[in-house]
Length: 132
Figure 1 (cartoon, one colour):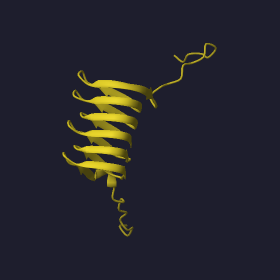
Figure 2: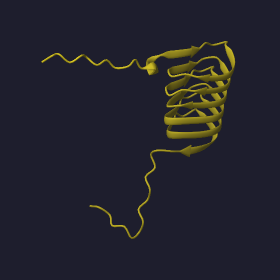
Figure 3: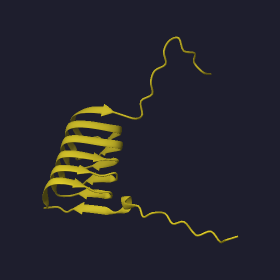
Figure 4: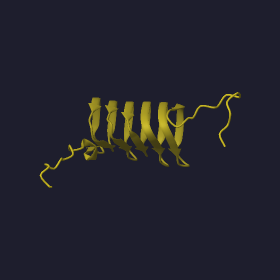
């Protein structure tokens, strides 16, 4: 009855937290499987399937590709967010943004071209019947 071996889930790397501390400058390309908190400066690119948080005082100048992002600091460059991009009050964004969803608090500066992917439903043509 209980002879089946228990199946264990593979460890998820998305719970891992990577941190670039305040006062740290990194130049180059970073890729990882966990979440990132940027409190220092990154000159280059960051790619992760996790969440990225840019704290107040943090800066990314380059390319960021992630699942979700929560920004309070500064970002300059190309930003690709598959899920939700949240801009908190002191955030300053410049460049090109492609996001699934966008949430902007009053006080955030958003000087970017923006393309929304994901949540857009196509309009029905005139000859199609509406369902009641």
